[in-house]
Length: 429
Length: 160
Ligand code: SF4
Image (cartoon, each protein chain N blue to C red):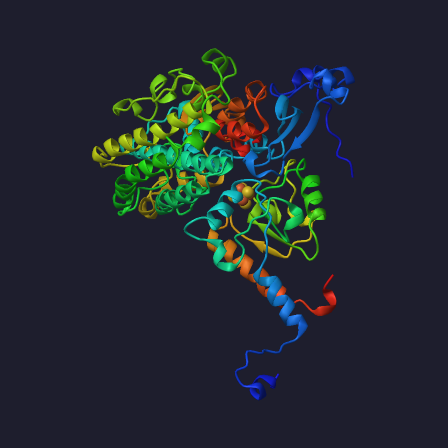
């Protein structure tokens, strides 16, 4: 049975809806031809399909390569093979229920995504986060950065041919996953950071677990560097490959180690400190050449800086609550529900309906392992967001791929993709 | 059986062809190196240092479908990816098996929306479903061992 719907006039359409007549739907053959050079049409150069099932594309990226012998003439990335509709799905969920979805965008850095979204909600609603929660968030953020970098290093080295580094990195990553599991109960999809603080306080053995990381890691980083830093094979594959200048990197919207590898000093932690990052003393490693090797060096140094921040935060970790006591957004503690009618109502309201955020639009960004991970959140006074947009660093870092790979050798494209550190869940969302 | 007792310890074992072939097949599965999303990261952990899948005779992940007989669908399958996945499955030589790893591959998981195929069994036949989001490496190993059990009991007439 067809349900009669009142006709919607285009003026009444929600702001974020795309008007169909604005979109040019048909693409002419001439436009398609421009993607490759004229030589491809005569058969002088070869077209090669790489992906979406290719071990070195870090997921399901597809590249259409035009090759002149071994040299890449043009490279056309085709994304969307992992499009999950996360942004659209988020519009139908209450604020709290969006958090598990954010875990699954950049699945190598779940906590950073949680923090970006929760930070945006906190900004929109105006919630103060207790200082202990802020410090714990910093510790977890830095562990997440190391987690993300470990997978990057392992897979990047594996792509270039150094298998053992992968096994070492995954071994160290397990230590970080143990911490995730201890705090949140899940190895990967933590959903631990909530609007207003943290889901619960960290368990009693948390300091020991972090201390283990702090003790073990410096030696392990030296081990990786011993394997790679001065290794002539590694340098042969990375030095001078995939160069991008500072101006181009800014123009393409690159952030994170990819931008800093080109020598641009931009780090969200320093530029717009959040979660009391300004309480800690750390430096931002910069490269100079903007090639694969410099990006590698930046990330390796970031390991040390992360350890430095964690060490400071652990030393100064204050006691106190980890969740705001604003009962409108934070659930009351269990024992309160037993004797307080108000708490029971709050609890019921929160878990059935969720809290309401005011009308308005905010942007909140964090520095995740890959770059600036931002959330644009627009609320309409209801318990569900009107629009959520993720500014995914991988997407922006991937954009210049066709530029930087021009003139590179076919084997270098693997090194370049590895060095810009993309996660397809983040690119496609 | 009974021949062994007559022959003493001459190193001869008799069994049925069915058992021998199934035993060989189940212990030398070559999975395809095929990661889709978050679950693929856990699949990598399963192969890596702590969990070490090679203890079960399947450390050889093959990036080419022509050299593999197990497809672990690790992650969510979008509508754009679905034809590619089916294509890969069709390229694998028989006999072949499929493990749906994770909730997304099994039933769509948390993404009940326009973009995700609600369960990979809509496009390829699945032998074992592994629950979890993502499943722990232990869970995946359990799923693989369940599949090995299944292969060991495959009757002769079902061989292709
Ligand atoms: S089941 Fe969970 S972990 Fe696996 S792909 Fe789906 S969302 Fe990611």
